[in-house]
Length: 431
Image (cartoon, rainbow, N blue to C red; front, side, top):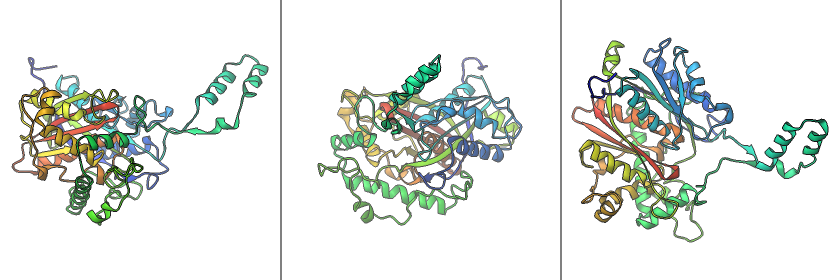
């Protein structure tokens, strides 16, 4: 329980993930359970947790088959942890595993448990493809039939069109627009140029390639299916190559700026982080990399056109800074998920706008600019890839290690936009 009314500090102990892979590639035959089990098992082995009971394992996937109704618990049973360890599935689109980390942290802070794992996974190679509602209705009528005649009658309604598969939706139900189309509108509203987007994408690839070359990811990523590195990274890309790509979401008007190069690729992968009290870490002879000190969620009214679909992190960060009594410039690292280069740039411009901060965020003045040399220093989603629910804990582990390795850094900011006009953000502080 709490000591008085003071929450306990929550330590980030370690992270583990499999290499992120281009969709329909290295992991084409794997399920979410296969990948998430591998990521959790890697963490279990690295931290010598085999046979141990943890307070909880919380995570999830965005694209999930009905067979995976208890995905995280099943992966716990395959991980080597004590089978008495519970598992919980959650889903907040691209913010799923960061949300999971906040949920685990809250349980630890409140004294409900001493240690837990947050995790996430997604595959675009094994999506939950189903048949349309007319065929499902026909099958259910046959299932409910009380006689052979009724079953036969149900199947007399069969049509060849029933075999047309229905793939997972990529459009927002409220607007009918894909995330890319929505972000294209944001780029136009905030006057974010193609050159700015390509520059940010180029830097993401260069930073990720340099981090791998320097060995930064060696103890965060485990080999899987013969893959030893993220295979989305383009170390040989250039601004010239990026500039030759055609717009992906608005090619008809000639005004499109989002391309395959400055948007996240379709990716498979899984990641996990271990969170605990410092006392638990000491007792288990494990280091504390950083502390997860604040978290915030927000949502915006995108359906009426009042706000851009992916602008919720601008609000969440502003509110979180107020909670923490910090300014936007009080960070040594900024880990902003690169759903699209344009999304990152729109958010940065929003924080720089005194009018936006006053009218939308309720601030007296602009939050201001960040030092771009502190942004996504080890690469981010544009280069590394974005298995939707796995991105949050990838970022937590990356940021925690950066803080641990720095002699001077004090804290880092995490920001993740999600479908449905939501955002999840967090602050990590040096141990």
